[in-house]
Amino acid sequence: MAFAENFLWGGAIAANQAEGGVLEGGRGLSNVDLIPHGEDRLAVIKGELKMFDFDDLHFYPGVNAIDMYHHYLDDIRLFAEMGFKTFRLSISWARIFPKGDELEPNEEGLLFYEKLFKEMRKYNIEPLVTLAHFEIPMHLVKEYGSWRNRKVIDFFCRYAETVFKRYKGLVKYWLTVNEINILLHGSFMGAGLYFEPSENKTHVKYQAAHNQLVASSRATKIAHEIDPENKIGCMLAAGVHYPYSCHPQDYWATIERDHHEYFFTDVQARGYYPSYALKFFEREHIDLHAEPSDFDDLKHTVDFVSFSYYCSRTISGVEGHGELNPGNLLQSTKNEYLASSQWGWQIDPLGLRSTLNVMYDRYQKPLFIVENGLGAIDEPDANGYVEDDYRIDYLRSHIAAMKDAVEIDGVDLIGYTTWGCIDLVSAGTGQMSKRYGFIYVDLDDAGQGSLKRTPKKSFYWYKKVIASNGEDL
Ligand code: P53
Image (cartoon, rainbow, N blue to C red):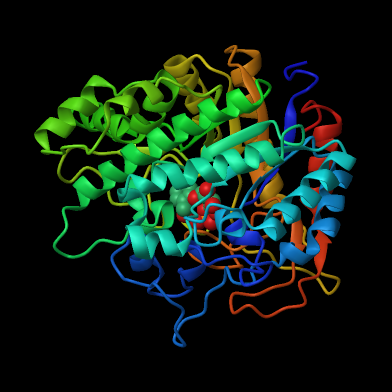
């Protein structure tokens, strides 16, 4: 058998894409609540278009999302029916600290997640909890400039400490920051950063990155002090990088791209800034506003390394080598050997095995795949049932590749959670029609629908996969 008895099979969601109820329970507004559907979305995600309040011209799909805030009992029951061993979700920071800089948390918010975690425990589902999944209270964005400000480190640590204490014994697996490298590519979504036209974006981004990395390591330290049983992970938007050709410059560009993305997890897993990063800071005149104690904090490394994998990325370093692949925040060149999803994400199961090997070689820590899946248009029949064989094919081939990584290559992998195990709002596009789930949710891109949940064909398939511990694909 490839997978250990206690291998953590499950699914993943994020508060901002599933929960809704953003104005309920005393919650404050978050950056992600204000990212609209439609053509302005990308500019807002990147921090190039300022959206600090709702307006009448836009639709904001995260406000109600799939309303898991009111449906969580039913949803968890369905996850349990599939046999989930774990369920990954995020806490909405603004439910716990509505403004972010208060001294006392919001009890109603704390209670909501306590009930949710207890419900999961009823079914022996292990919570895997992200502290910041593209989320920061809007008050911290407006008043402090978000993560560019060192004070946010303390606010984040207060939030982290509050939930570590409150959920001690209920939650053991934590991720500090979701897809931490998205800070570079979608800065408002990833880290609440909006740029004034006069600002040097690179300087702002790396100052914010430093602050996030210090906050993440301090939170790791706090988590271990509160409960030595706690396991803390970092989280990277991953996907192996291929050189477009064997031209040395294509390969060199690939190495540079590796540095760019792995920078974050290199710090989180090793405990110090890699030499290539220090040189980069020097060249770019990035003069980090840091305290000497920051570098001691960074030594508190993570217990495991988690990542999302949707596709590999092909990198070109030579003019005219390849055409740009559209449809993803992380840029790449089209790979002629791979098919694409309806959103242009290239499908590459072997790339997952490669990614697992690259990451395991690099860090020598347990790995956790916390997102993988296919965003596709589903066509339900009159009963709302979807025969999503394309999704089953995608997941089957990726699970087979991850099995090879474990069985043949000896990678230490502790779990696998598919993204959007129930249909939810897409982070990149704001669409409902880009669906990932085993469970269909009756809701369209304009926010219309009954919200009814219906298991798809893949629901029954995944149930079988889990029951056989990955043997019956
Ligand atoms: P959507 C870009 C590249 C890789 C992962 O993405 C990304 C993104 C953002 O678009 O996001 C992660 O919904 C993220 C999830 C997100 C999921 O991948 O754009 O952690 O919140 O929903 C899928 O199709």
